[in-house]
Amino acid sequence: MSEPVSEDRSGFDWEARFQDNATPWEREAVHPALAHWRELGVLVADASVYVPGCGRGLEPSALAQQGLIVTASDRAPSAAQFQRKILAETSSATVIEGDSLAWRPDTSFDLLHEQTFLCAIHPHRRKAYEAMAYEVLKPGGRLLALFMQKDERGGPPYGCSLPAMRKLFTDDRWQWPQSDGFVPFPHPNLNGKPELAGILIRR
Ligand SMILES: C[S@@+](CC[C@H](N)C(=O)[O-])C[C@H]1O[C@@H](n2cnc3c(N)ncnc32)[C@H](O)[C@@H]1O
Image (tube, rainbow, N blue to C red):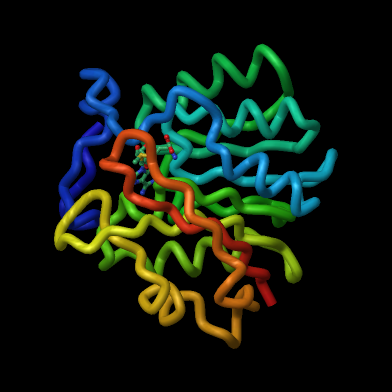
């Protein structure tokens, strides 16, 4: 499915990328940030976690295997089909095929795992991302962020510098970690671009 340019100015055709296996953002193993979140004690059994723009990532399945109640969404049919298949093997997780910026749950989540979705959408759509994250999380819920660091212009991926993220996730709605609360995880394929892992708490 093509991204309508009016909604996503990048005009990027994610479905075509999946069908062509032209997916350099994909990791061969589960993102190491999951071990980091676990060490911090935030991945507890029976917590509900949402993974928007999940693609064919292995993280929804890894989270389900750790006992979390997983909901994953993506508008690319191939991605939703992939997740339905692997999640059905291990859990009763829910997979939504549709616009992750527009979808809202009946019951809000404890956690949102952000991984190369925010950097995938055009910066013009970022306010919709922030509204989505705020509305899908419970008060006190945690946004497990991986902010893609990239100096060059253009995208996707579009760089998510901390100053830009500070403007997007404002202090009145989000409690930020200390500046040393971010841990860099270089991406194994995207020229080692670091993703900064940090937890923002929804007020
Ligand atoms: C760079 S990929 C990341 C996929 C996955 N999170 C990972 O780390 O492998 C971006 C994903 O966002 C999805 N996507 C882009 N815009 C979307 C939207 N508005 N709603 C739902 N999914 C979207 C694409 O289909 C694609 O799967």
